[in-house]
Image 1 (cartoon, helix red, strand yellow):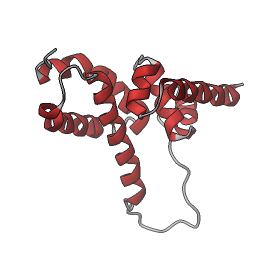
Image 2 (spheres, one colour):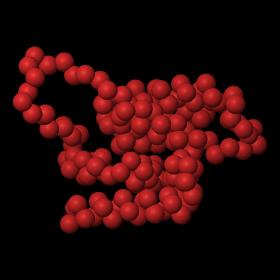
Image 3 (tube, one colour):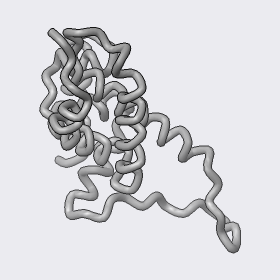
Length: 155
């Protein structure tokens, strides 16, 4: 099976990848991560084997770009006029579900990615396992544990 043209790949998978990045990198960084994801995918596309799971491959790239964003955010200095005595609280997404997304953001990285991939991107456990580079059972367990933690917070 030959690979589809790259534009067809973008047309098919752009929206689910964007939703995943909004949930994992945050609304402010999602556009940058989205662009970086598809630039990296375009560069690597000629080396992709025919018959590969293109969807899982794209989500793997997107997940790595979101991780890179979070790592870089921790290294960036924020200019301020005066240094406060204590750190300011982190601002969450401005939405009615801000508390839910804050709870999702507080999950461990693998559980957060598994929950987001399952419920915002509708990936199967096998596809989640491909993205997270783990077995289907480990992906299923990550989703289960993430949902369990979210239920504890919301009840």
